[in-house]
Every structure is written in structure tokens, then in C-alpha cells.
Amino acid sequence: MKKVFAYIYLFLSLLVAETGSLEKGVTFYEARSEGAVGYNVKPLHIENAIKQFKKATADSELDAGVYLMRSYYFQGKFIAKTDDEKKKVFSKGKKLGERLISLYPKSAAARYWFLVNLGSWAEVYGTMAAAKEGVAGLMRDHAKKIIEIDPNYSNGGGYFMLGAVHFKSPYIPFILSWPDNDLAVKNLEKAYSIGDSTPSQTVYLARAFYKNGQRDQAKSYLHGLLKQPFSLTEKVEDFDQHEIAKSLLEEWK
Image (cartoon, rainbow, N blue to C red; front, top):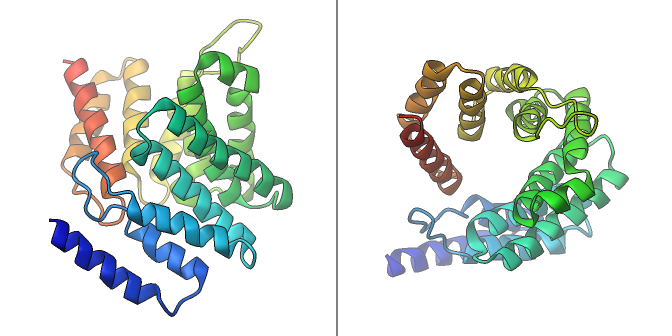
């Protein structure tokens, strides 16, 4: 296995030798799952991707910045081992997203990947920090803006984010009164119907169905997901969602 990974790395190194920093970064990013076994992920490709995207921001600030946020998410989610490491990485993604949105307010991609990092930041920092930062409201407002800018971006990503925040945010009378699981289902179904539905969309929709009492439908969606093969470039992300689906089905027995 080590020899195979070494050959892959050598091939990629030769492949990107004559290309620009952005293209090099994309090549390394697309290879981020190479050599991964379950949650045991090799850090080298994503680390190289981050280095190249940082270099590329001088000439391609928005495109490189969006890829950098995508890379920070992957690094924080699947490479970082401790909460402190995760906090550091997701904070970078969050800060970069805030900057890119201020410079490129009409970019759906900047807002979407900001929300991915913001949501991950909130999970690792906890409820109090998320409440202080106003994460739920930020996610709702940016998700609506993504829908306004480009409703099809990332397979209905704006609808997915809006549905997810309605699902995850607690209803607190007079404080946080807008979260609604019916709206979660509505927006998650909309996202699921746009483009190619993703494993994370399927898992969230199943969870929202289950919360609404539609238990057979929720289980059916997860069983369907588990029959699907992993994608070549998102093998680690797909493995993660399959593991969540298995855990939910076990919990819902």
C-alpha cells in the first residue's frame, strides 16, 4: 500500500509540474481521498492543495479562495484529530469566507463554503459559542442569499443549507422562534430534487422525515443510500455519510 501511494504521489507531482498554482491545487484536491481507508486519511494531498491555493490567491483570489475553504473543511473534518486542531482549521475557513463574501457578495460559492466551515466551526466550539456568534441566523440569511444568486449551485446547496439550519436549530420561544421542521423537509426535498442528490442531502432529509414522524420514508432513503457506491473523488466524504446512515438505522430499529 505504501508503494502504491508513493507511485500515485510521484505521478501527481509530475502531472502538476508544468501547471499554475490553481491548477496544481485542484489536482491535489481532487486526489485528497487517495490512499484513504475509512477514516484513516493521508494528509499529504490536502496539505499540498492548501499550499498551492494560498499561492494562487494573488492571481485568482475568488476561485483559489473557494477551493481553499473547501480544503480547510476537508482538513478540519477528516485530518485534524483534536478539537483544538479542528477549531484552528475551521476558524481559518470561517475567516476566509467572511473576507471573500465582503469582496465578492454575488458569489454563491463563497457563501456556500463559508457556511460549510461556519457550521463545522459551530459544531466543534459548541452551543454557547454558536449562539453568541449568531450562527443560526447567519446560516439562514446566507442560505437565502445563495438561493437568490444561484438556486442550482452545488446541487441546490442553498436549499440544503436552509433546510439543514431549520432542522438543527432549536425552537426557543421569543428567542429563536423561526426554526420549523416542516420548512426543513420542504427545503431539503427541494435540494434533493436539484441536480444530483448528494449523500449528505439524503441523510439530512431522512433525519427530517424521521423527526416529522415519517419513519418508513426516512429508513427507505437511508437504505437506498447504502446501496450506492462511493464516488471516486469524494470517497472519504461518502464513507462518512454511509457510516452516519448505518448508525441512524441502528438507532431507529
